[in-house]
Length: 325
Image (tube, rainbow, N blue to C red):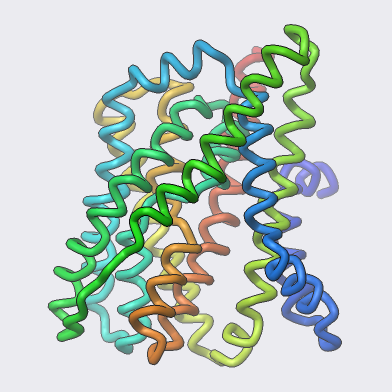
């Protein structure tokens, strides 16, 4: 049992953080999380994650990632095409409007800025390719979200004109992704000698920062989650099913197109994960009257981190066993 906990420490830590924030009757943890959020804690952690990612990425990974057109197209197919279709199918179930809205918003989101890259690296995949998908999908999302979400919302008679601040997203990508990444790459070339970096420890540090981001997100959403009652549990089942559909389709694409080890990890994790910040912004800006929509966005984010945290560790263990053999 102890060995299993050690192997799945990331998943266990996420569960413990969730439980601690939810059962803390004094709200001390909530206050700490809100202070960190108010002082740009998530942005600072994402910035540091990409500095470390720059230290971990090898030059041959960058070249291979940019040239891997097949894997890029497959990941984008999951993100942009299959995810909205999967959400549309699930919305045929008898669900309340707020829940449907939340699921549709999540489905049109680009991939996450940080966690998918970290988990791709943990699973033994190409972090440079995961980073490339992150930048590309978030840039495409600037144009695709208003179009695809408007089409989906037309089936709900929710006709709203969606205007996304494109320049703000581009600036965010530059400041939080590209700039710290270049710092890491330059620091690796100028400061560290070949083989000097302890990549394992840096990967662990990145995972701890993902846990920190989750803690801050939970602090901001605690009241909504606790106030949802039984709604929380059926949303939990719904978003779990949605994420399993994305993972399942990703694995099918990988198998059908025969994408090999070291390349398919970025398809699986980048294709199935969705960014939280942009989904919350859209919900608050355009659908603030539907509180359960926000709940769907937050719960899906926590669920996919837990599911993928377990999956990335299992894939890493499989890689270790293969290498030993």
